[in-house]
View 1 (tube, rainbow, N blue to C red):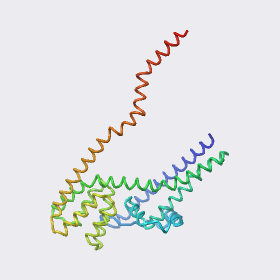
View 2 (cartoon, rainbow, N blue to C red):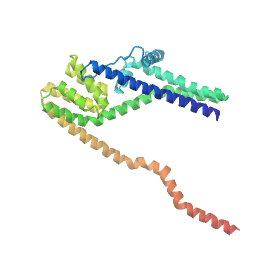
View 3 (cartoon, helix red, strand yellow):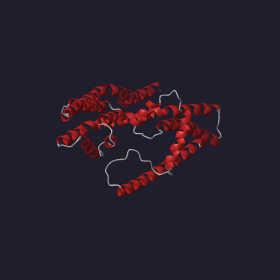
View 4 (tube, rainbow, N blue to C red):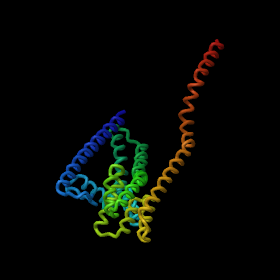
Length: 310
């Protein structure tokens, strides 16, 4: 019981500490943004915000990246990790080192907390050491799974918002706006609908403003998101631009195709639902029904057999 109490105390302290850090970071970032908007009148989003030189977050990331350099293997293809981090929305220059540093940190912190709780309780045994080994392995290997989950959810949000974004692109381009002005206008409109797509369009706008060729900027957009429909859209726009065809008509056709594809995915999920619901029904619903239906009969049978025996 004492070990459980210590675990609860440590978890409560960590939760409160992280909560206070999140609140302070949130209000600090809002103050920084307000100060920057007072000085700058542009509506564009910066590609990278360096932040304060003495901030706790920056120092923590530097320490984690230095820790991750020891875990990085030269044989490991870091380009794949950087691509996954970019698809997840993490664009730190030392993203790969921070990624490996977090894996090492979790592998050290989880067993350390468990050992500390058992030492304070006075129950340090060989079984505890084996549990620490499994906790260290779990902390090291759970990070790629979490990164894959973040990437998948971010790509799903972008994929769901893409048909509506295409409609906005069509309206703006039919109104006579150029591609860069269209992307700038649409990114402002889509901010409340999909923040991830807003950031990606703002980065594409920034690349176009710096003089990068339109084709390269659009390809970068598809590579950053990693969404297959965005890559198809980018390829369609590049091909239409090369052939001199109407981009608006191509976008309208692609938007109709995406809506049909979304409807087909919904129908596919609906068709899979009876099979997926079978196991919860067998495990949770049917036993409760059997207890409600057969329970009174079983009680009556047991009572009649008891009285018959006496």
